[in-house]
Length: 451
View 1 (spheres, rainbow, N blue to C red):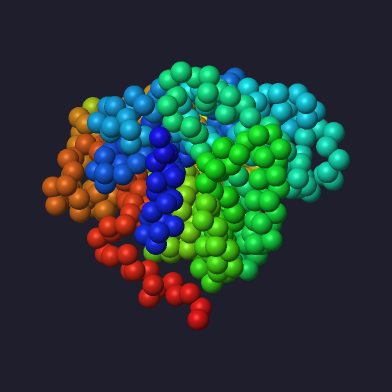
View 2: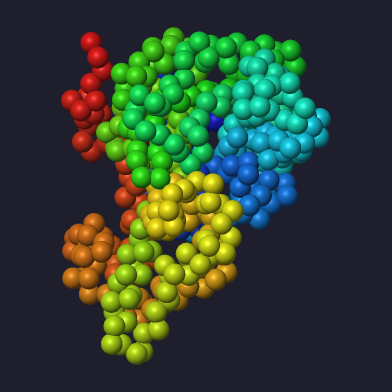
């Protein structure tokens, strides 16, 4: 049985400007919105968990791979998305969480991690062994050799293949993504010229070294199911700025991959790119577009807008006890600054602004906290009892106001949140679909390739 992603790539290689977007989030609001959008657009839903988010010990979400898979499947079922349209992926699977350990111990844990992912039904596997481990001869801060990374990646692939064979419920063999040239976590960009574009020579070396390592371990069949290379096409975002895709800077990457019948590119950190840029990326063979923070940023915007409306409705209304949603979130971040303090600098006021409004959206780590969840449920409950008038919605959520006026959605706080998140997802549907309403060549006048 051929994997759905292989079919999409085959269509792309035949000249159809199609792709797939990958939802990288464990947030239930985001996952529900993504499932509903996939059902509406009659497309696949690719959901990915990262190696630090979900592992055999629970990761920072407290979920093991089987737990995450169960949650996503339940949400898909609730949203009436057919099971065959759901694809689960594992991102950056490897020894990343155990860099403080020696290679033998770190790789042993990475092998167990990848085994758990495959046995839980994850069928898109990003092999990432690029990080130096304790005792590696690589200088501090410098990358490992492509040969060593390839050897360790092949070692992980052996485990994935064995797990797929031994797991009786697995009818579909996993597909693999290699390469690790991704933007700096959290983003740190100035002008576009400072953003690193992956050189073609590095892509060639990754492909050559990984193929040799796979073949040395008898993984020829797995190599045939290796579908994409992760590269940096020049897209990044920071706390308050975005580096937009400029296709002329990625021209060499585009031309190289066109001559490779098997491979396309996977692009990380495509968050906040406009729909025309996303469409241009797909046309330039960045077929897999990953998005995460932009979706939880939209969630945060919606919740804050509802919170501002709640505050206004509570003025002079003793029956409405406000949730203090924004203050509760900030208290949670100040109480446990682990997830934001390395990303936000400057004065006290600048840090406070970044905590609430940064594109990096470190707030996403705090939604699961009990106090935050309690405040969120109170906010939603309040606004179901005390419905905000259309005039107030127009002030704080103008796009949702328009949707209400067109009777596309109902006046319910969760529906408003869902619409806000799906407004981001629809840009990715536009970028990856072969049947966009505006037509396939809409980006050409805006993002021309140099002659």
